[in-house]
Image (cartoon, rainbow, N blue to C red; front, side):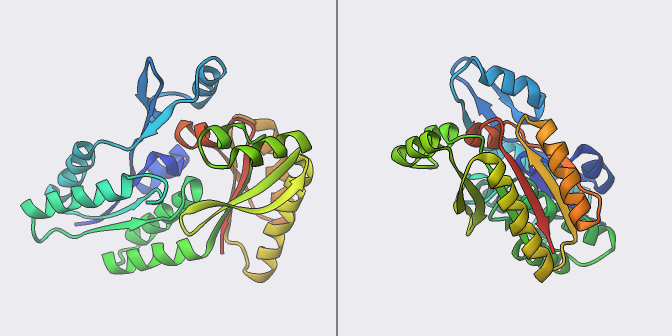
Length: 280
């Protein structure tokens, strides 16, 4: 018997890490007017190329049947489950996972299943799932794994900067007037995720200055709470991400990996966004 970790595709955990820790991914979907697909079924560069010629699509959570079937399979193999999902304020995925859990428990009342709301997305969610998988491999109990996840969520931070405010505006993430003024004046917000939703940490003139300010915020956190792992996120701007990775790696004296963000989060923030995710 083992503890198996499930998360959703908006964690964007690099493939090699997922495979080494045996983390199962349930994919959200992307819906254009004339086509729909799982975000795990398209390469990121192909999606952003589509985005240049099509309207901004909608996203949807994994079907309940898919979540149920995966949970049932794991339980039938004699294992336990810890599921960590996208913020419940951003998606119904967490709620649907709980419904699937109850369906499985109706058939297998002795099954052990823990479902956790990460209160975030991207690698802030990803790190929570990674920590869970590491603890599970160490042989810790399902209660200890859950506790480690909850502690990681409290000790992590996600800072990111959009290229502009167009996608946030169209997605309803920022008021129309704020988006218009921001683009005219080249005011770029440094965004974070707090209490499950996106919020503005600071506003800076120009993207380069915003990136410098974001790095300063990270450095202050490192001085106060020694950073353990860090990753650079980007949406279709790999050169910028590589430059930031080298800068952060030199500052923190540690390896800093790069992870591109896929369609579901990308369609809400837009190409050109760049960010830092870390935990202490």
